[in-house]
Amino acid sequence: MRKVTCIITETEEDEFLLGRLTLKALGIDVEERKRELFEVVMRYDIWRIAIGNDPPSKIEPFIIQFKEGTLPMRCRPRTYAPAEREW
Image (tube, rainbow, N blue to C red; front, side):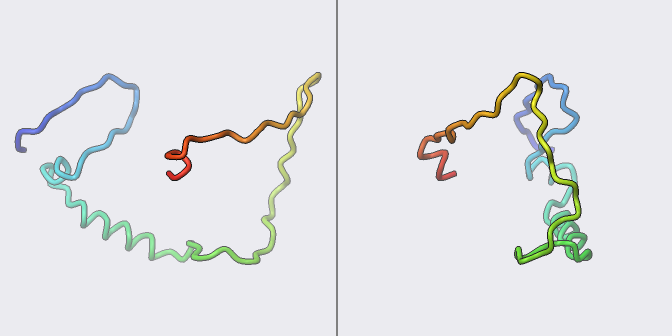
């Protein structure tokens, strides 16, 4: 492995991200993994391309139950800075 900057942080996370160069140095071919993922995704016909006039789902409706003494309220929509709105 060539000389790279390594940053170590203490965390309770079980997962972390590696860059493309680090993966390549470890012998992991990112493009091959992408091809394999594409093949698995395309093997099963469970994906939607468009949303149409489908029948309703067969699930129970979600019912909100308020705690005793609470009243429902309407809140104003949150405002965002222009840069956040574009994102």
